[in-house]
Image 1 (cartoon, one colour):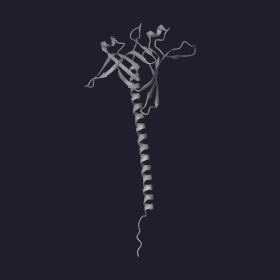
Image 2: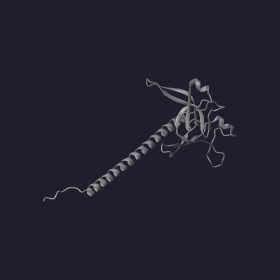
Image 3: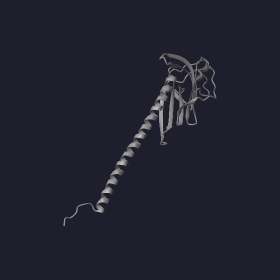
Image 4: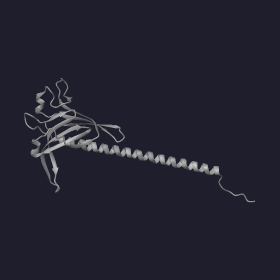
Length: 203
């Protein structure tokens, strides 16, 4: 009698177990790669958003100017600043026109607000109008302003307010530079810190 060839139940179970482990390993590797990609994509998006935001602030500060000889109209604290600047605006036709603007930044409830008042509106400042959300997810904002140092041998020093109490001459001037520290929260609740120093051109 001819013996039939085939798989036994045990052999079949072993093959199924090996195949299941192989599928599990492939899925685990795919899932890990997908999560890593999402994390990198989210981090890249955050870095890009902050980079563009800081570039805009830098452009505005580099065009900042002293309002008059008595009052520069630049004021700043650790979480806000207000100043006059010159903005370039682009029409649909491609033409560029320049306007004077009063710009205000303020941290409100983990959101950096930005208010821009151009032309004649720049002279009608409403201190209660905080503006629109400019950058969200801000866990910490620290602004420091560079001033000429009163310490011999030291060129400048960083201070938390402008003008600083007890320094009336600062009201007539702009800071030498601005130091920005931003701490933002990512989707996975991790914190990322950004730092930038922006020099002032008009002094």
